[in-house]
Image (cartoon, rainbow, N blue to C red):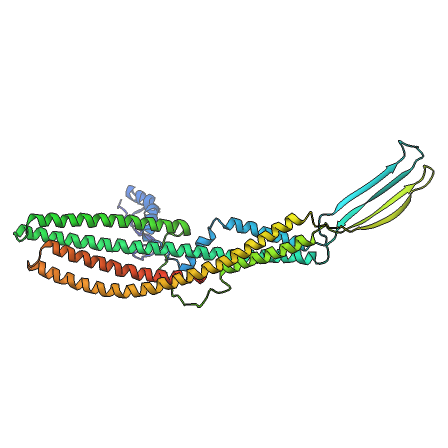
Length: 443
């Protein structure tokens, strides 16, 4: 019997060939007979196809870096203060429900029954039953609606203020990571430069151009730069972890630079100012509600009663309606009114304090931005000078006109100037972000 030849290619493989299996086998009495090799191929064929398709599936692309706005929204959504905002939202809903009620308080059911069974025993009976409905005082329901509305406004401004605070924290953590990345990159560059110089010094020592002390000095510089690189890498990882733990995102935004537009003064709709102002309005509305609550609520009674003089008489039934008007003397609501007045004063003081603090923060952010611009201009010129000095020092070292100590000094000055220039560029961009933060701008 001829051995069958089995050739196959899996569907979806890189070769792009369609699924095909060809068998050349001998037929005997109209039946296809496969030898042992054919049976093994038929068994492992599905497994091979599965592995081939798995190998051909392109690896999932990494998620693109988030935007600055997405990073802020992610941190805002996972902020612990969200639980308090949910509770405040329920409070606002409860106040709205109370203000929309037709009665001022919970109704009550009452009843009265009189009998002379223990006394004369003539069969005297009297009963009375009904419901007591507390009524709103004039203006009290409107005041309650104002409290509910001011609570809703306060909640809305609290959300804005929390989002701004989260944006400020995200901005700071991003720029901290950017600074650490800059430090790591420069530390790695300095390490590699020192290592290249050490290899050159070793070569010249072997040729007899330099002393062994120069090689030791160069190796010491390499070790120092290597240790600095390791520290910078650890600090970068720490900064990234702080960002990831706050935002829940593993990657930094690709575009995080901001442009600051100078403003003459703190805007009135600044989230922190608006939040403080809504608290003032809420305290005012609460004072009005307490003032109108003095003495309690008027109460109307709706019910009926019946009575009989002795057991031979029938009951006389009547409908009963009564109105109770409270008399307020102010002593019982004075503590609550005083507490509301205190809250109003504290809210007003907080508003004024925030206004001054925001004005100061804005001035400081503007000054920091101007200072960073001026320092960056000087650092750029200093970097140019030190780089030229390093170039001349390298030429002199190769020519044997200066020693290794002089070259290392020039190299250290050039590295410091480059580091300062790049740091100031980042500091300048961070100052723009802080300027927007002081003005209450969200990414």
